[in-house]
Image (cartoon, rainbow, N blue to C red):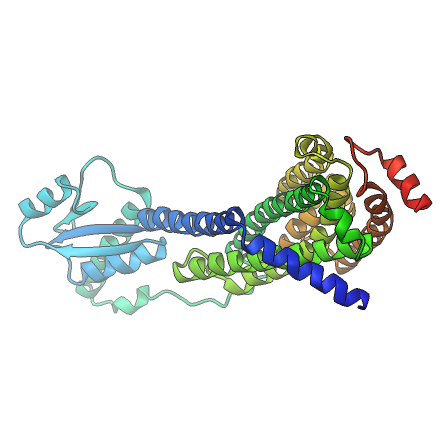
Amino acid sequence: MTSSRIVGLIARREIRTRLKDKGFIASSIFIIVLIMGSVVFQVLIQSGASNVSVGVVGGPQKLSSAITEQAAVFGLDASVTEYDDEADARQAVESEEIDAAVIDGESVVVNESLDDSLGAAIFGAVNGLVLAERLADAGVEPDILAPVSLDVSALQPAADEADEKGLVAFISILLLYTLLIFFGQFIAQGVVEEKASRVIEVLLAAVKPWQLLAGKIIGLGVLAFAQLVIIFAAGLGGASAFDVITVPGAAIATVVQVLGWFILGFTLVAALFAVCGALVSRQEDLQSVLLPMTLILVAALVLAITAGQNPTGTLAKVTSFIPVLSTMVMPVRVSTGSVAWWEIALSVVAMLVAIAATVRVGGRVYSGALLGKGGRVKMKDALATERVS
């Protein structure tokens, strides 16, 4: 068979094996539920902060509609209830059915304190109506108070759009980190299991080491990418449906570029994890050999968070060109709009070069270390064994 056919068969074997793994399925469901739960939690927080209820007793005409309009200016969704009796309105406030009651357009009754935004909306509505009545009594047309519309030209992206892109990028980076660690360990554990059970000897009798490595990376990479797409689709769909994000186009653009970086980052990290797994023969020794890679990914996550706070700083700029670190740092910088196109291109080229070098050198280590037994294989010994074979 051709090499592509062999690699494809190994990739399908990896996919089928993991899809039958209850732990893999459970973790996938857990992550999706976690993301959707965070979206619902955000909705509850925002809805609790923006929804207000007001009672009205007497006062100027159209006071209820005026309060609703003024509240919208302050980002509040006001529900206004009209009462015939002041005692009923006070009882509603005391029982916390409403947040405040406006009595005859002259006083406001609250249970403990009046929210600043709600107070400004009520005062603005009452004063506007009273002033319009006074102007009408004086023979002046109330239209004189009509606001003048202005054309607004934004030189920079709106703050809401920038904040949403930053939030989506931050959540995406957390998912990126989680899946890189998760699937990287899956690859390493799979290699160790094959070595411990002697399955690797049977496999290497039929395929070349680099074909086995490529099949593992492609197979688990497809699963990881599909899982990430499902999570992003569920998260963006839920956030858009509940109006947690107001600029879905910007959020989708951020997600797309994160997916691109995931493909590059996963290819590099998966190869490194597979090589690390080939250096040991027991699961007990695996965590110690994976520790350097885990620390690098942790450092990348910390640097990405730092880059979000200062995307134009020297540390953020330098680390966005270092392979592995750039997988998480560059998407955050791109989401802030502070990266030139040539910086992105240079970072991508650096990643491609690193992937090529890792696959070439790592493939030799992988080949020489796979048949090693009796403990941890040193890197130089694996290279020496590969040259002899």
